[in-house]
Picture (tube, rainbow, N blue to C red):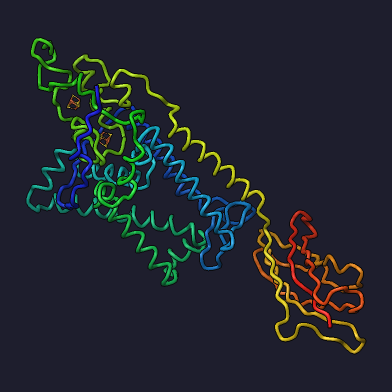
Length: 460
Ligand code: SF4
Ligand code: SF4
């Protein structure tokens, strides 16, 4: 038995905003899982900006001051190489999951799916079941229709604005944002982004819905490259289901020459992507499992075994063993683990201190009235921690000299200070005209926060 992959089902269809999908609400095992996951993800999304850590907002990506705080860690634009690491981990994790269990990311956790599900839920509460919604859209504009449409779109708009406000509160301190919102005191920039994300959410979750997944999401275009015969995907058992056809519950399908598919069309009605899984695997399928719930419900009514549509692999449908440890899957899993370990190591070994040494550009050296050679430097120190720290500045390789170096320099959390330093050394103490040495900058309270910066000393 082969999974029926027809070439026409992998062809991307042109966008048509008129072909709306009227999704039938479905209850069942997989829908329950989706709902729980959706509630959990929404709760996390809404709650995180309100979490406090050390009397500060725990997660705040402050774009204006270029300071990205996540609990006890603060990242700066200089740390953006870590972002590349995060993208690598996310990409390989996605490849691994997709090779293993298909597009479950799309069906269960993608924000587009999560929000669309919530918007459809509201639509269902206001406009009624699938058939009632189809009838309402076809009906002339009466007071009842206008009231329902106004109520639905107002609810969607409120949800969109709330989503946008929550999203912005990851970038603007939450107390400042909500105070500004209720006082009408938000800045023009914040107001713009709030409205922008509000409109984008309303358009995506309310209007675009599955069209976004089918026509705009880049992931749907290349995910089929990661599928193979061992990938778990939602599939219809063609051999068992065909030939399909209606029948009465007491009829014996064998006598009628029928398979187990009673052609109730429920699997199509509940599909958020608007496809018929009986036609084979299609790129629009987001692996949400709603058609499985619908079909299992029908199978139970007819006293047939469940699983006419199921999460399965091409191998399993062919009666063969699914190889869960195939080379591709193991490679993706290994790469995900390796990049995760590297990322954790990079974050863990990151020193929350940035320093730069700039030599005086006007003169290589000066000889003072006592005949001692002077070189002047500016040491810039950025305290990347969330607490004020005192720093000592020392030098190596010039230890014979009695140097007066700054001690106990206080630098507030998240700020940079410039410290001018003049090193005065008797030229006879130095063998070469150019001596390489390091400035050593060390936090007094946390000696493990230490940096060395190489520079040179010139003599006459
Ligand atoms: S075919 Fe089934 S699993 Fe795929 S999107 Fe439709 S309902 Fe979800
Ligand atoms: S839900 Fe099951 S029985 Fe009904 S049409 Fe789909 S495959 Fe056939």
